[in-house]
Image (tube, rainbow, N blue to C red; front, side):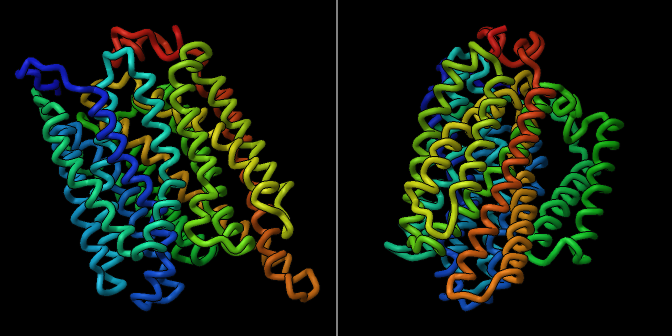
Length: 493
């Protein structure tokens, strides 16, 4: 595909970047904005506590399982129209969810949001990749995009708190119309159409294997969190995921037009970037999950105050990500920066583990670690996002971008299940081994949080090793030649 430049005008890259970043922010924050609104929605629609996790899981299942086909559709039929279709569909699903008269309608709307998010997210990163492919501003653009994608979850917590407290939980869904509808109209003007000179057939067998395999994977980890690792649904889902995804890889080696060309992930630089995103997403989940619990249940914060408490981390992300991408990355390369980010993630988890106790305050126990991880995560995500799509052919930009989002989604699912299991086990053990007191429940919860943070330090340690061993010190010339023929590579090669 090539941009349609028949009009003779150069597309406004910065306006397109702003549009792409806004769309990406909407997809990312929607994964957390509803979390803050869940108690109000549960009270309004009268559904059980056991059922409410499906409001979150329905979105994650649809989004995670359909990302690869969503990215491929953008490559085949044009990222502009996939992007616009994703925006329109996402806004309609959000409108239905906001009007939901029952729990079933709300869950169905959240699943539809995930479907259209799976179209929208890869198209957004794919558009960014091709829009800045020949521009000296590519590092800056990816830095801004990475800041939005990394901080979006904490922005969702803040926005969810504001909307729930000031208006209604339904506005946590309606707000997407305010974002998506104007963005769709802007995309018609700002994003150039692409001419598809050759449109290969879709690999339907690979699509079926990938979608069902990813669905089984995300569902299995969700079931492990909700039920247990020994539950039949967990075991069957995870075993099926392994079989289906292994079959998917085998088929991709044999078909003429694979859904995911294996050259994309077998490449050392891109493969290392995907692995780094998986590990960092898994570890970072501990921050959002357990600190949200600690702030609300132990410190007594309201939803709005909880969102505000995460602001220092978000501010650091927005400051550091563009700087890393434009100033540091060209000088030192990807590997040292990702290693630094993993080290800061390790140290922040260590701070939470050693500093949090039932008498901790926000300033003493929470803020230092938040600031540190706000510096560390852009060091992982900003160069990884850029490296994960660097050097791919234009016709593969969408599916390579989908792998970035898939890595985040799988990492989040793994982090949710594993860390939640560790938390529950540690809390139960503490309760059974301590004398009954008025503060036992609170003390046990804090013990569970710190135990989970201990495991999160191990995750970031694993991420450090992956960055040191897998990521190359410098990007090889063939990476740059395919994607960015004019500008020196981000590695300074």
